[in-house]
View 1 (cartoon, rainbow, N blue to C red):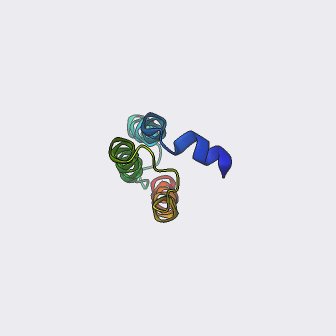
View 2: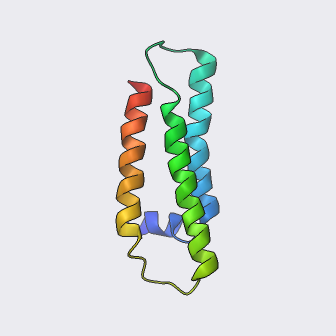
Length: 93
């Protein structure tokens, strides 16, 4: 958990890097056309979720840079994780 928090908390550019991975996978699935039953657009939901999280981190850094206890992450991380897992499974299944 410390590794995850050191990579993501207070670093919206790192979070945007995470958001680019599903976008690249989306375009690769669309270009290769592997499996007509797959739904590559579901990966765009994952990317949008990560982008919204990056925007939230940026907003927190702008408004309260001294915030060192982040209770909001107890809500945000499970939501981002569950959306990422659910829509990634949907995209590749």
